[in-house]
Length: 468
Image (cartoon, rainbow, N blue to C red):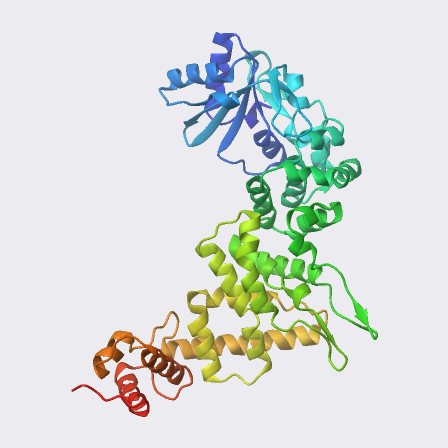
């Protein structure tokens, strides 16, 4: 199977291993991806029966390449021809109940494969001269790949209790590869769900983002929900689940609706933060749910409430509190606006206002709203999407004519103060707002000359006199 070792680093490692009389293996994701015929990432893991750091340093000398050493982890890393190569000594691990940090001892190849998370990640190719390229697969990982199954090398309750992050990783791999999680492992995740609380939120967020970036993220979220993990790591999303009936009237299950919107977005965009906007768009529906005897269930104001929830949810999940968060917040706030335009007669002023508020994010907003149409009624879906096309065309027409994307009114506060000889104060705010509204409503064109004339008249109505 030496055809799996086509990168030039492998024969160099083979010769050094022979010289140093140590055994080396490439293990983990590289092996899995080669067997699956998937493109492998630009990083590989080399297992050394001995000191991984010593071997890496000797290889670095041979290649005249810098080696980064991480003594506390017992690993070392170098880069060769664009490939990041990490070296670690074979080890066996034991865990305390209250920590995912293992007690590490030197071990054999068998010990090291035993401690791996899943059978598909425990396979190794030999880099030794005697059996170069031979596959070492003690847990039938190749069979599990054929059967598209995620399974742990040892008893899953031990594997997940030792390192509870592996529960998230099991779901992440199942989502990314479209595999199923073996029943025994799935039961163990459900039984051990509470253990996820010893894992840092940053590590959980990293796995969650990988699930969200998968081709069909709903696979992972259904696993998270069914095992009880979602309730522990993201209770606000868990709370979307369920349908309530009063007087025979029910509402849709907002959890499964959200997953459908997320999958719809994933088909059209690989943008992580647009996918987060899909997850968050209805997040305030449980808090705003009301029943009206005449019209049934309502969620009035869920877009405003949801936008206000976004910063705290991002903080709780350890997601970045920067422009990414503001982007998600904006889309949550505005996600109903295009839908209202679809339902109503589309006026130029409504389109101008939407362009002004959405700015450069208008295309992402329209994509989210398109994805939000999840009705099972094909006629309704077709009608909505046809109307959406009309709104998109109207947006394009108005944008080309009025240039309102990221628009600022042509008259600012300095102009107002200078014109009327006044200082900062409420009159400046009143006039600025009046100019903006007049342009958005189409009462005056978007030009400095027209805005100036309007400003003078507005100032007169407030008792202000133009300074000549």
